[in-house]
Every structure is written in structure tokens, then in C-alpha cells.
Image 1 (cartoon, rainbow, N blue to C red):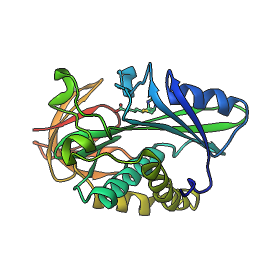
Image 2 (cartoon, rainbow, N blue to C red; image 1 turned 135 degrees about the vertical axis):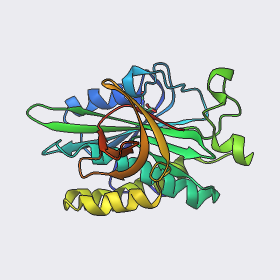
Image 3 (tube, rainbow, N blue to C red; image 1 turned 90 degrees about the horizontal axis):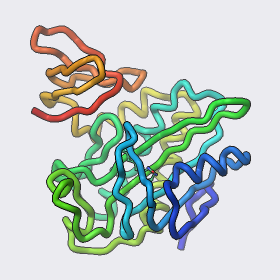
Length: 242
Ligand code: BTN
């Protein structure tokens, strides 16, 4: 079995959240490690939402020591693209990236990314990746919007194989990140976009906006063209196709 190139894996049977453990290990000074757990008791997503984390899913966090965290939002895009390329390679399914942090298959969510940062004397980015892989079912509340690889293909997948491929893909794009070649990252993201060109409803703290998703800018914001023709920058929020 190949090893995730350039990263040292730390495996656990159960954790509250791989992001919590990643934070603990980063605070000890560890860099370029992967925190992986078979399940999580308090898996979380954006806005502190619950991430259902039973056996069969993939839960891991990539720990990176960074000089600067200004462009850390790119790490989320890099992670989503890495997962998309991995799913496409292993399954031939048409996986796509949904702004800002999701991977979709058949219009349902199969993966979410939670990037958190630690800033201080040393800065860290913690890129948490949750993928629905071998789960057979989901409860009624989420089964209309979430799906696993197993539910679609009726096959089981090796989590280690997925991890190794994700890391290979991540490393390629992370090189562009280190070379400040952010445009290249956006270009690749656009190639797999589930969002651009669609009519979108964006729910943000400042209100709800409806328009066509026309671009992602160089700060990773989504640009909507509203009905009145004006462009609206969406920095954070949830988006839905309408
Ligand atoms: C989201 O969709 O809002 C993001 C979900 C991120 C889930 C992953 S699972 C591994 C890591 N640990 C967590 O607690 N969350 C992330």
C-alpha cells in the first residue's frame, strides 16, 4: 500500500473531531501530518453544523504550517478539487465542486470541507475533509440531500486508497498555492464547477440574493449577477440552485 506522500498519518479509532485532534497536534508543533479517524463523535461542518460521522465515512484533517493565512480559503478549493479528481478516477462518477466547500454527485452532497486556522507565533491551516464513502443509508432528514459512494455504486471502497489519491492530487495543487499561482487553482476549480452558470439563491448574514453565478474572484468569493444586472459578491453563506 502506498503512503500518503509527504504527510505522516495519525490514525485513531474514534475522535470527537479530526479537526480538534489536528489542532492539538499542531499546537505541539507538528506539521504536514494527516489526522484520520474511523468515526467522530462530534464531527462538525461550517457554522458549527453537525457532520454525521459513523463508520464507513472518511474523516481526516490535513495539518499545514503556513507563513501566512491570507489565502487559506484556497486550501478549501484545493481540497474539493482533490476529492473530485479522486472520486472521478476511482468511480467514473461525475463529481463536481459546489462553492464554497462541497463536492456533489448527482446533485447530492458527498463531501464537505471545513478549513480552520490557528494564528499566533506559528500559523496553521487545518483542512478537514469528510467524505461519505461506504455508508449504506442516511437518516430521512439528510437522505434527500446527501449520498455516499456505496449508495450510488453498490460497491465498497478502500479508505486508504482514497486518502492516498486525495493527497497526491492535493500535493499537485498545493504546489501552485506555494508558488502563489492562485489563478491556476481557480482555473482548475472552474473546470469541475457545479455552481457557475446556474441560477443561485445565496443565503448570507446580510440577506438573500438571487442571480446567476458568473465567477469566483481571486479571494475565492462567489460573484452573482443579480436580476437588475448588478454584480454581487458573496463572501460567505449557503447557496442553492433555483
Ligand atoms: C461542511 O460541509 O460544512 C463541512 C464538513 C466537514 C466535515 C469534516 S469530517 C473531518 C473533519 N472533522 C470535522 O469535525 N469536520 C471535518
